[in-house]
Image (tube, rainbow, N blue to C red):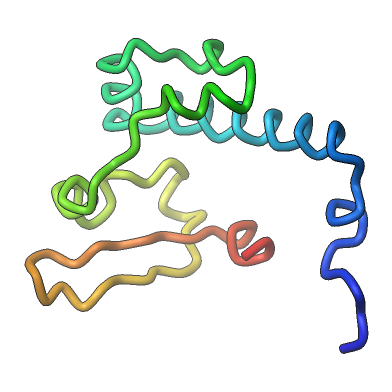
Length: 113
């Protein structure tokens, strides 16, 4: 493959356009997690965060990230934000330190991965 870019439209985008796209996508991810998963909704509420509070890319600092122990706590599917019939692939750690950590992927996830 001699292509210079994997995705020329995004990889050659002006910086201000790229930041606008990143912000749109960040807002969409936060909204999806908030609306479709009780664990994330509770974590956001505990942090005093609502999807509409995300106004700039710097607001990512307000997002409560999960620890590996929390990922294990909600094993196997407690953090899934889509209907299970949309999950087409599953990856899991070996679980040598306890419960495995599971990641689920939709067709779209795999397409952009």
